[in-house]
Length: 403
Image (cartoon, rainbow, N blue to C red):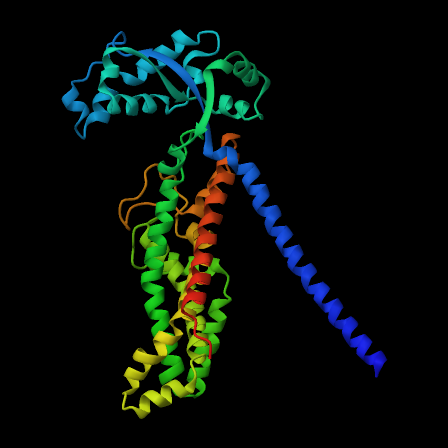
C-alpha cells in the first residue's frame, strides 16, 4: 500500500512538472515572438530627419494667406512651386552630399504642413526638419550601404531621429519613408464592421433556433454536422466563394471593404453558431422551467432569460472568431483586396486593403525600408489581436455566471 501511494504521489509530481514545463515552453515561444517582432519593428515607428535651411521668400513661393486657410491650400502651395523650392534648398545646403537626393519624396509635404500651420514662413528664412531618403534612413539605423553610411557620418550633426507620425496617419506608398498603416487599418475596421453586422445576429439567431426550437431529427443532425464542417473549412475556400458569388454574380465593387466583410462573415458565422450553442447549453434547465412556471411564453423564456445569461459566452466566442477573421489574408487576396491603395477609404464601397494583406504586400517589396515597416505593421496587428482577446477575457470574467 505504501509503495502504491508513493508511486501515485510521484506520478502526480511528474504530471505537475510536465504541465509547468508545457506552460513555460509556450510562454517562452510567445516571449521570443514578441521580442523578435519588437526588435525588428521598433525602427519602423521612427524616422530620420535632416535640418533643412530654407528661405521661401527668396524662392518666390507666394500664396495669399486667405488661400492657406481654405480647403485648396495644398493645391495652392503645390502650384506655387513649393516642391521645387525644397529641392533647390537641399541642393544649396548639401551640394557635396547629394542635394535633393538626400530627401524623401515626401519632404516637401512636411514643409507644406509647416507653412499651413505658420504662414509667416513664406516671408522669412527658417530651418525645418524633413525626412531623408530611404537609403540614408536605413544607414542611420545601422544597416545601410557604405556610401550612405559615409553621408550619415558627414551630416551627423544635422540628422536626428523621432517618432514617425505619418506611419500612423498615411496609407501605402512606393517610398518606404512615406508608407503608413492607417489606410490598411481603416480598411480592416470597415471590413470587421461589415463582418460583425452580418455574422453576429445571424449566428446568434441560428444558435437559438437550433438549440431551443429545432426538432431533433436527421435534418437537424445534418445541419449541425454541416456547421461543424464549415468551421473547419480552409479560409481560401471562402475567398473562392466570395469571388464567385459577390464579384462574378452580383458584380459588387472589387477590392471594397463591404465585399471583404461579407466574405469573412461567411467564414466567421459557423464559429459564432458553435460558440452560441455551447453558451446556451450552459444555461441550467431550471431557469427555463422557472420562467415557464411563472407564465412566460417560449419567446420570453428565450429572450428574457436564456439569451441574457448565455450572452457572455456568445460575446467571447464572437470576439475570438472576429480576431481570427482579422488575421486572415487568403480570402481577401481572392477578392482583390491586394491592390495598391494610396488613400484611406472613406466608405464601405471604396477600394481598400486590410492589415494582413498590407503586411503581405510590404514583405514582398525589395527595398530595405519596407522590412522594418513590415515588422512594425505586424506589431500593430498583434496589438489589435491582443486587445480583442483581452476584451473577450474581460467580458467572460465580468458577466459570467457560475452555477
